[in-house]
Amino acid sequence: MWKDKDISIENILKDEVPNHIAIIMDGNGRWAEKRGLSRSNGHREGMERVIEIVKSSVNIGVKHLSLFAFSTENWKRPKKEISAIMNLLVVFIDRQLKRLVENDIKLNIMGDISELPEKSRKAVEIAVKKTNNNKKMILNIALNYGGQNEIVYSIKKIFKDIEKGIITIDEINEKKVYDYLYTKGQPDPDLLIRPSGELRISNFMIYQIAYTEFYFSDVLWPDFVEEEYYKAILDYQKRNRRFGGI
Ligand code: IPE
Ligand code: IPE
Ligand code: MG
Image (tube, rainbow, N blue to C red; front, side, top):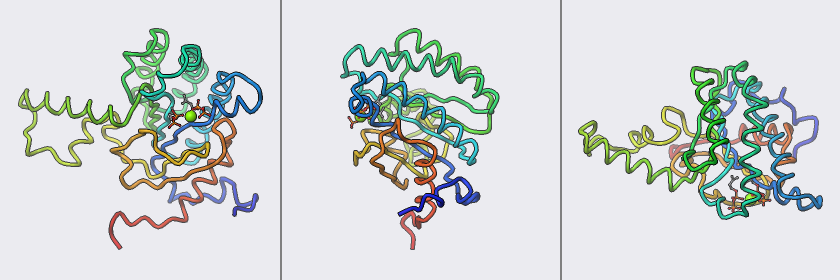
């Protein structure tokens, strides 16, 4: 168990900060239901944690942050909840685009945003464009994203490139596939965090997490404050990664 005084940014080892952190931001609905609020209120509070965790990540020196915001399976939800989430996306960009630019953060989208409502899609496209040359951190936001869907999409693109003669079948290997993923050019996540007590991956970054360290927490995403984040990173820093070696 961590004593409270140990859970602080000062205790994080600067040269062992995970280069890439992925987070499945789950538990917004339960957070709201527990308080007798509508699920949309949970998503709104969850957005406050996004802002906080992006800021902490920059302070700690994380170079890639991947956030699961909306899955290809989340379209099964009631229309009202989906539109609340899509609306929050616009609110988030309105509130944060200036900060992303000031802090040299590049926004990269994982997933097919052509299926998003027009207003959300446009806000996202503008933010991606405006942050395109930023260098300090890449913020990957997964929207209408599914890991299996990403693999299918990459297979199709590979076939197209073979057809066009851009690559040959023999050139395709584990490493080459990365060029066709939404995270092209980025390293794999070192640490994957899943709050809310669920012990599953829910189709997130399934190609990229082959050797990722997992951290599961019972805390619901809207309660996942900075200290919880530090706890996860401190836990990660105690681990011994072997990548199949000894
Ligand atoms: C995660 O919170 C946010 C999205 C999936 C968009 P949930 O809405 O899944 O919250 P729970 O799991 O129902 O509590
Ligand atoms: C995963 O959460 C997707 C996001 C956080 C966006 P879900 O709530 O959709 O996952 P399941 O249904 O519990 O597996
Ligand atoms: Mg959930």
